[in-house]
Image (tube, rainbow, N blue to C red; front, top):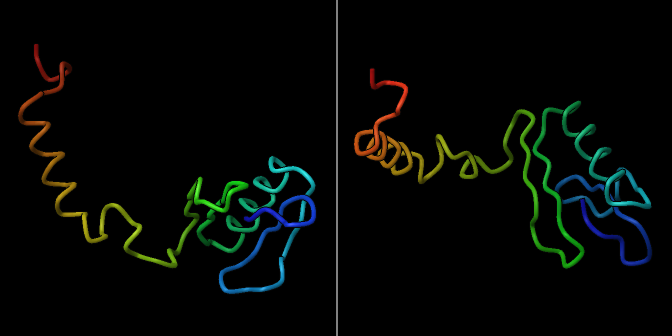
Length: 96
């Protein structure tokens, strides 16, 4: 989803030059973009007015698997850090 230079917000599929949807308000455009992505099982990337990436949601297949925290390039490091933190700071629920 990107800001339309003339007015409102456009919902675009990756590498498409024509929008597949348009809305006057950002809130309506976000809802429409998420609905389209949910139906297609795709990822939803929402940009701010400045064009910078703001929100990312995945509803199925990932266009870029490196964005998946569990299996991406940092997945092993994140998993290792999570285990380390759990060993240093055990959950208060596990103490009796």
